[in-house]
Length: 107
Image: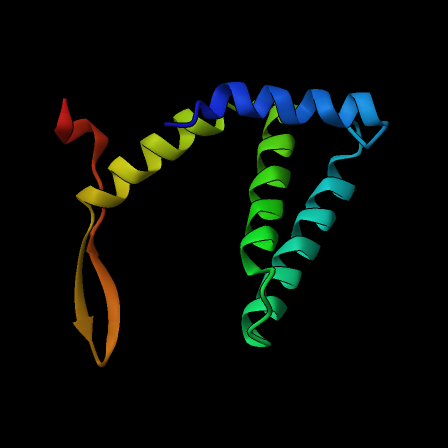
C-alpha cells in the first residue's frame, strides 16, 4: 500500500527541487483544475494517456495538500468513513442523501 503521507512530502520536495511553485495557492488550484480538464478530455477522446492524466491530478492534490499543511491521507480516511454512514434514497430518479453523518451519535 502506498504511504500517502510520505508521497505527499516527496511530491512537495520534487516541486522545490525542480523550482516549481510552492507558494501561490491560487495558481496551484488553477493548475489542478487544468489537470482535471486534461483528464476529462483524455477520457472523452478515448486517449491512451488517461491514467497519466489522473496521476497528474493526484500529484497536484498531494502537492497542494502539503503546501497547505493538510494531511490528505487522514482527510480521505475521515471522509470515506463519513460517506459510509450517510444514507441515500432514489427520489425522482436522483440519488438523494436522506441522512447525514452525525459524529456526536457515533461517540
